[in-house]
Image (cartoon, rainbow, N blue to C red; front, side, top):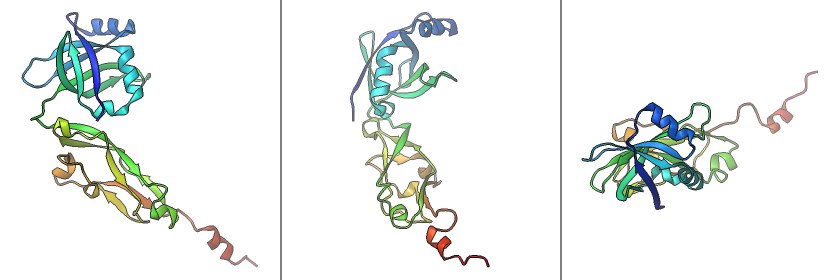
Length: 207
C-alpha cells in the first residue's frame, strides 16, 4: 500500500467565516481530526499538496495517512470529503478519522473489474456487461485495508450475475452488507436486445 505524508496546522480561528477565508486564500483546506481517545481537532491542510496527491494516486482515499499536526504525528484515514456543489474538483472540507492497529474501520472502496474484454459472455456469447455497483463499504483493521476489491469477470456468461458474496476478499476484510445478511449484484452480462444480423438475413422478404 502507498505511503502518504501530509502536514497540517492547528486552527484557532474557527467558524464558517474563518473556513471561508482559508479557502479564498487558495492556500489551505479546513479540516477536522476526530476519533480515538483524543479530542477532535480543527486543522488546515496545504491545498496545493493535497490536490497534487489526490490527482496522482486514487489509493489515498483508502489508505492510512501519516498526518503531522504542528510536529505531532497522527495516523488517519479520509472519512469524508465535502466538495463544492458545482466545482466538483474543489474540496471544501476534509474529515480525518484517527485509526489504530487494534480497531476496525469502515470505509468505501472501489471495485476493479478484470478481464472485461476476455469475458465469456461478451467475447463468445455476444453479451454486454452491466455494472450494478462501482464501490462498496468494507470493514477491516487499518493495516488490512485494500486499495480496491478485484472482480474477475472472465468466466461470467450471458444471463449470469456476480454478487458481493462471490468476490474473493483479502484476509481480514468483510463487506458490511454481506456481513449483515444482505447480498447484491455487482456485475451482469446481459443479452443484446434484438436479433443478430444473421437472424435478420434469414427473415423471408415480404411478397
